[in-house]
Image (cartoon, rainbow, N blue to C red; front, side, top):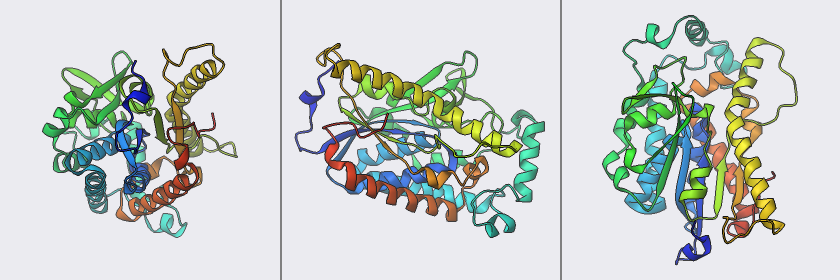
Amino acid sequence: MTNPASKAPASGKKRVNLALQGGGAHGAFTWGVLDRLLEDDRIEVEGLSGTSAGAMNSVATCQGLIINGNKGARKVLRAFWEGIAEAGDKGQLKPGPIDKMMGLYTMYNTPAYMAFDTMIRMLSPYQFNPMDTDPLRDVILKTFDFDILRRETLHKVFLCATHVCDGNIRIFTNPELKPEVLLASGCLPLIHKAVEVDGEFYWDGGFVGNPAIYPLIYNCDAQDIIIVQLNPTRRAEIPHDVRGISDRLNEISNNMSLMREMRNIHFITDLINKGELSDKKHKRVHMHCIKNESVFTKLGFSSKLNSTSEFINHLYEAGKECASEWMRENFDSLGVKSTMDF
């Protein structure tokens, strides 16, 4: 393993890796976070690990960095999410009058979503969507240039998917990138058929790595990893209705793999700090986390399918504000120490 200090950018910039959680439309919050981070020319991104919406944000950022640095990344991210919002405004799954009156972005009281939710509990995607129609595929094909992404070596991408047959994690890297990889990373089993990539079938990566941290540790030189977390880790109340229980199970399962990796990283770091492990043989990692749980505790699973422009823009602004506050408080710690509360 290389010594991170020996690979510090000559420009004196803060070199970081990004670990981006998945969460459907909630990924627009991450767009806002990234837009704010990339506004600062002192930030230099090396590696990106992402799952589902985090995979989309990772690839958009990487492609933009290749084309025109931080400015290019901001431009491609905007193009992707504006494409998602345009498709969402045209789609059937959007909050109805009752949900809007409640001031939320959920769809639990919207007839179209209620019918959809009932259908996916009774029929598989192989039955109700045999042609596997997916508006996301069109946005991906319109936004991304996989030829330049596959050739890239400076900015590294690691996308997580779940292998259906053995349940193992699968990490896709730059040379393997193609539309099917992105669709595989975000494939919800109750809504879409398993995605075939090179003869193997995959579901959403959130089951096994949301996101996976270890590729950034072992394959990148940057010492700092910034996690953008979307799924709430704690709720004050115990859910009692079916919807609340289901939503909480979704949050817990989508955080489980990340929390497990965080415990391991904390354990190794603690051994290094105690001198029981050599920091010449083991990489010291500075962990950071950007999140605002109050944005998401009011929401549930249905809002992850709400890709209307109103909701996308709301989350973008919330993410940008959250990142601005984080930068004010923690920018000077980059390259120095962890700011994440383990």
